[in-house]
Length: 240
Image (tube, rainbow, N blue to C red; front, side, top):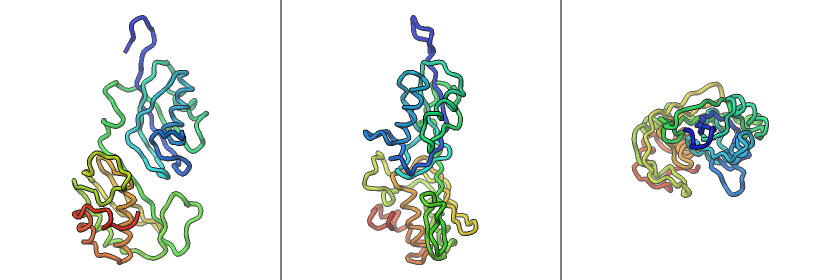
């Protein structure tokens, strides 16, 4: 888009971002300025020499990490793609890194063009808590029944009202989500929960894993998850 009387061209840039979320208050900008979006906008604005507003594919909660968070921004400043990566990373906190950046059509929107989001939750099952993975993995001290957990996870796949698994602070307009994939795999002492959906509610995956943990330790049968889902009451579910 060329503005009349100007030679600058407004470009839309899409970026891939990774971050360790432990020191940030989630993705979305907050008055404190301690979010991933706040830090990205400050860094990219410095490279562009004009204010830059970043739009993410979705929000993440405090403490959640990202391997491939997609975002976009519009900017009239002409910069090589490498500047949006190496330049931004030079001024970003060590816990945030832009992985790639490419120009894209104005029709692209990181949030509305996304076809799915994928969330991975790592659980360490061992009598002793983890050290190097503190803040990166959940921990449970006793063996878990993976078959029962997998059976329960399968009942959650599909388009449902996930009210029973959303936090009281959730701002989503609807609790209905289409969960397309939910797998549970074991690798040594680790259990990997992988969930794919069109979008997630606030604390949704953490609350799902909490319920599956109760099933895995024998507190409830696998069919209990359907009762919780259909009840649409957060109080019926396990703790986060």
